[in-house]
Image (cartoon, rainbow, N blue to C red; front, side, top):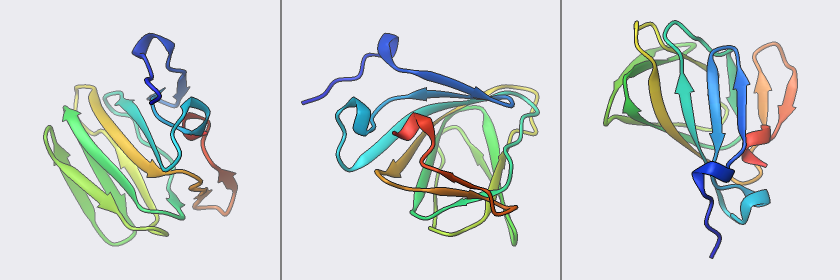
Length: 125
């Protein structure tokens, strides 16, 4: 049974978002990828969609998930399941950093709102 130690997990930074890879195929998972996500105060992701359902669980702080139709504000203890093919962006409009856990099926692929294919992100490989 694979165990991923926090000290051994890879990290990735992208425009105020800090990804701390946990489970993924390269770390022994066969069905589910997970990572910790730190979202700096004021940070915002680019709009994108994933071809599989993605789950966000807020551990600390607050964030918003913004789709083309709605905005969902989430606080510590809240969770959201984003359906496959839903375009969204994540933002932290607060003055405090937020911490989340994110779950995604193995093999999921992302596409940016402008059509750029990003495939499977490195923290989920």
